Image (cartoon, rainbow, N blue to C red):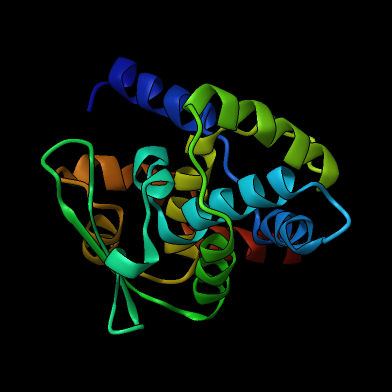
Length: 187
């Protein structure tokens, strides 16, 4: 890769916003806060569905547990973008909780309106980042390298046809490199 292409790729990596697990936990608390308006809690729940499953907005907003949850253990969904790849992910602990919250409040709204509500969710959650629905997908992608998930498995979880799309998340956060760099603190 030439220097110019490398700089362009690095620039696109730096512009990606994603949330930490702590920030997702703050949004989870917002989603469960019964003193807040139902719409705030609902948008928070759907955003968390994106953060913990990697679903795009279109796929999350049309998510129907009765159709997309198989044998009460797997979320199986054909993606609406690209080649319509299948996302097939086991309902692990936090994702199972979020699916239960989403079941309570079906949601239909435009992407633009959803993003407007997300700013309210961020404020209630004390998150000082401009978040959009796609930040949820980036957040999921950023969790994968931290969890030690192989690039090949991540590609399937994200429903990517091209490994280059998946590689972005592994260049953003490489736990092995970060752990190695932390050893420099001992110098």
